[in-house]
Each structure stands twice: as structure tokens, then as C-alpha cells.
Length: 167
Image (cartoon, rainbow, N blue to C red; front, side, top):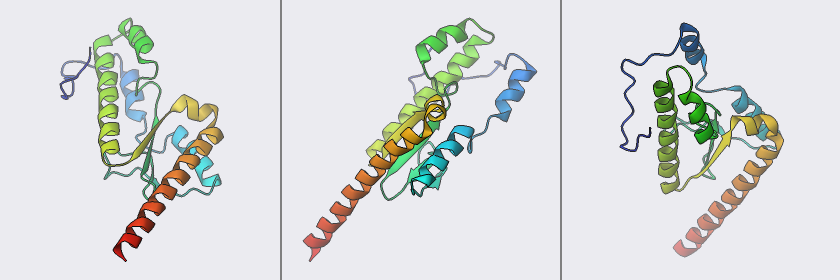
């Protein structure tokens, strides 16, 4: 079940399978999740300074380097569909399968749309799975640092060239 029409699937009449499930879903944090905090600490240790949860950008990236135009999303494995084909099979065998498959598929579609929009606006988008962040935050932070430094350098060269052409 995919939603390619751009419309959100209707969850009308569909309910979480239990009160415990509903309570668990409500307790999920929209920002300052454990993976975000861990990655931000690793970036800070490298001397990188950033903005958090920038609501003016599509998808509200978790970490943003405005000067370098780098937007980072720390995607939860379940909610954003890591290993989606395998996860979808497992979900289809559980309670309320239609609801969960539609919900996560819509998240995947929304993530793709936000990534595409940001890229068209000149942003480099980095999407990191929570499991990868938890496994090796220092390595991911070093990769982010390389990208940010390279993008800042390109931006600085463009500004210098533009200034010269105006003189």
C-alpha cells in the first residue's frame, strides 16, 4: 500500500491496537531524541556549531548548518521505515497492519518529498538512521564535519568570486 498521490492516507476508523500502543506512540519525542542528542554532542566536540529543529525548512531538520546549507535528519528506524520491505512484511502479520503500513509509508513518502524540496533549494541533505548514530556517533560526526567544511569552502569561493566580479 503506497500513497503516491501526495495525500495523506486516511486513518479514520483505524486505531492503535491497544491503549499501551497508543500511550507509547504519544510518548515518542518529536525532537531531542537520544540519537539526536548523541550526534549533537559528537558534532559539538568537533567544534561544529549548528541550529536545532529549524521549523522554517521543509521537514524541520534536526540539525542545520545554515552557512554550509547542510540539513541533517536523525531518522528513527521504525517510524521512517528502515529496511522497509522486510519491516512491511512483519507489520502485515501483526495487529492493525493496515494502519501501521499506511502510517510508515506516508512518513517515507514525506521524507522523500522534503529531501527533494531541500535539494532543489541548494541544501545538502543527510539522513542518518538512529541505529547508525547509536552504533558509531563519532564516525558519523566526522563524516558530517567533512561535508560541512567542504560546503563552507565552496560557499566562500563563490562569495569571493562574486565580489571580484563586482569590482
